[in-house]
Image (cartoon, rainbow, N blue to C red):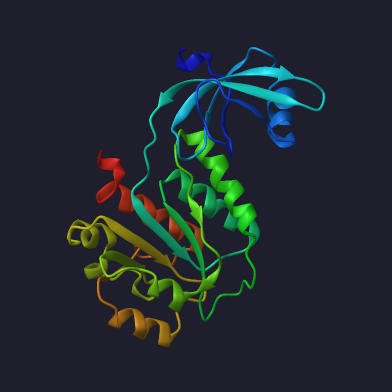
Length: 250
């Protein structure tokens, strides 16, 4: 089966094995049968974030039911680098954007954190997860970025192990030449795990800055001469990291 034979790629929340039959939920049934206008016999690819990617065929297509039959494995399971994104959440559309692009850029964990100047009080985890899944479907990613619940910055940082490099994007250091992100990352100590921290549009409080300054294995960086919006900062930092320290070098 060639890549051109595949008509769609779906995440399925079920174990995958040759010969298994899976009944799809209504939203995926609508997507395949109504949006893409596929029918019985159409070939698709499926993955579940754990078993790799498999070929599948639409084996039943009725008004209220759609089933697929799993075929051979196409790719073995691999996982993205152990990279977290910690960020103060923003308004809905831009929050969706962060979840989508962070997933596309290979983040393992997407973690909204509550900071002193954060203006968002609630985060819809299910919506973030849906965005991460859609991005994985479109980008050939085999694992799904984990969405961790909205929590306080102190608690989140306490969960960052000593061997996880914390890359603190400090808006107050915009334009500071000695903190340039590309130079700082190129000189960063060898590491297998990292977390990128993006603050709210109001910046970090004095107490938060003091806490971060005192933290071990914390790399303060500047994202250039301009103060970026939170969503722009997140994507910029992730892109720089992946190009210098991450999987863009593979």
